[in-house]
Image (cartoon, rainbow, N blue to C red; front, side, top):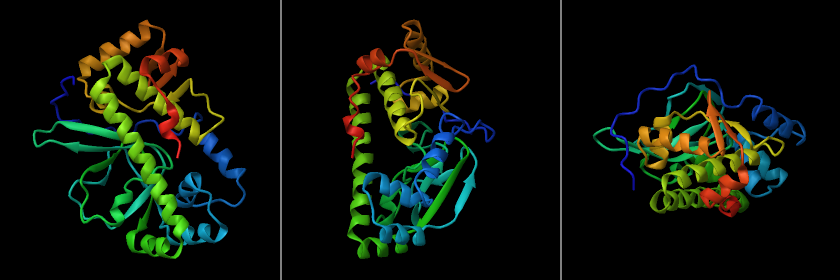
Length: 272
């Protein structure tokens, strides 16, 4: 595997442009307006992996807490924290990570609007990794005891949580395989294809050829096991091959078919 960066990640700017611009936010609003009664963030997430009944919707709406706005670079969970519940990322981007004592950081999951930040917090005694926002974000927290009561009373809610956890694990396996066996250009191509696919699932009307990508080159490296210098070289290679254009925080996929071929991307792992 390529050498990872040894520098401690700098604090992110809280003024970074919000990723749910017209490329994503409008699609979420359209989905909500066409879905009848507005669901809470937690209900909407679980209903997306397993259709739930009206009674189950009401139960989930009742256990969900109030929404909170947080800035970029905010720690949702710190490694070692004692969890009191879990939260849904209503909008914005976040990431899961672990850090070595020397400061080196590995990002091993990117969280998009609708994702559950830490489902294991319902049963874990401590957090084994951190979760941090990449952009300004809106979170909704759900107390663990209320969620456990809902699971006991409604088995299909438990199944929906299980399906959401299986999807997270499938993405994790894909990332491990990507890091362990693919060369740097293929790793990056696979990541870009995955993000395009996941963002399209949030907004089916969106153009997966262009989307906001609020990652610095260092954060891309921490996600792909590459140094910042190597990330820059791979981006230049993908541009030279007319596969992508990445500037001002927007990734444009110029040839999705060839990018998928380079990354050996098969989206079936993203299906629950």
